[in-house]
Each structure stands twice: as C-alpha cells, then as structure tokens.
Image 1 (cartoon, helix red, strand yellow):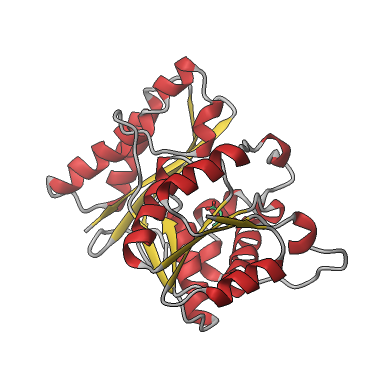
Image 2: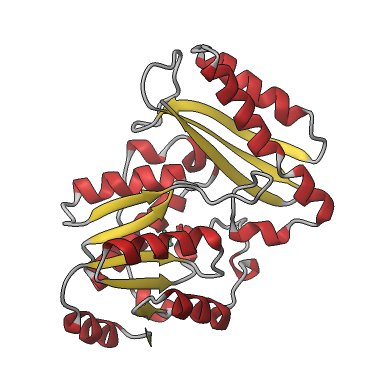
Length: 277
Ligand code: PAF
C-alpha cells in the first residue's frame, strides 16, 4: 500500500493504475463502517484509493474541529491489512491554499435536516468531495448510508456536475445493540453509551408501526419522539419522515422513505436513519 500526500504524487500513482478505481473518502479515525466501504470497493474495483482528510470547511463555528478524533498510524495499518492500494492524506494547505475562493453548493436538498442545523456544512462537504473526485478520478465512490442526507447531496452533485462516477451507498454498520457506528461514539461515557441505543430503539418502533400498516408520517414521527422522550440523557434535535430522494417531509408514506433523526447524548450529537419501502 502506498501513502501519498501531494497532488503530484497522487496523479503519478493514479496514472499507473490500470482498470477500475474505487474511492473511499474518509476523515480518518476509521471504524467498521469505513472498513465495510473499503471491503466493498475491493470486491468491485481493480484498485482502491482511500482519502483521509479532516475537512475544516464542513465544521461549523460551534463544532470543534480540533476535538475531532485522529489516529493516522492506526488508520494506515487497518487499510494496509484490508489491501487498499493507495491512501491519499492531503494537507489543509494543499486543499485550501491561501486565496482559495471556489465552492460547490447544492441547493434545495441541503436545506432541511442536517442542513438546517449545520449551516454551511454541505457546502464544505460537496466542495471537498468534488476536489477528491477531481484528484483521484475514480470510476466508483463509496459512501455510507449513515449520513443519508450527505449521500443524497453527493448523488445530486454528481448528476448535476456530470462527474462520470458511480456513487455506491453502503448499509449502516451497527454495534450488536443497534448503535450506528460513528467516530463520535468515542466521546460517550459508559452511561451515555447505554443511552445512545435510544436512537435505534426509536427508529425500530417507527419501522414496526410502518410494517403493521401505519402510513401517516406524523404518526411515525410521533412514535420516534415518544421513544426518545423516555431516555433522560437524550435531547432530540429533529426527527423526520421524508421522501428518500427529495428529503421533503411527507404527510403519507407511499414510496421509498427516510426515517431519520439527530439527537444529543450529553454533548455528543448522533444521527441515525432507516429506509422504508
Ligand atoms: O463522511 C465523511 O467522512 C465526510 O463528510 C467526507 C465525505 C469524507 C467529506 O469530508
């Protein structure tokens, strides 16, 4: 496995690849969720490139970039053991040099849900992902369903800007008790870690109701709120029952639907979702 930092090293290695290239963009501190993306990319592509870059432009002023967990040595040894071909670890200076002023912004679907809570977040995500796509020029790029809105926004950007890249969305990796894997889970103490299963329990309750015939979206949202309210350590930010593609809130569930939520457990903000239909 090769590790490169500069764009010229990246380009030189990329030119040496023959066959299909899969990109797994990450911010590092890899967990099973990331590793499952790398495994899927390995199955489907001749070469797998992983980028590790904690992108400062997707953090809001109140979100602590310096607190974001990092462990590059561990990440590199995990990626090596999975057989990744190339890891690109760009510097902040090379991604956003002095005088940088170009942004990629997707409009409507970035406004609700995460977009309404984290202004500017998706502008940072789409800008960096476009730069990663341009750098690596992959045939396929792999993202997790855990960040459901991010996945929808990147699909939209890829269509709108004609990137010749197939976007592959992989299922959420979960702990045995249902908690969705996330780099942020390390912030939870023992009590909070137990409380954090309330997201999965709440989504499961709404899905059970759906499977028993409930189609009123507000009823499903209320079921999720009711379960969240049973957990004292949980502070709900939003629950949503929205169209899977447009992310518009529904009145009645008819087609593919995204149940999603953001919840604070202590100071840690967790998100999770289920897809129905
Ligand atoms: O999902 C992430 O880890 C990040 O948002 C991404 C896609 C790597 C862009 O920085």
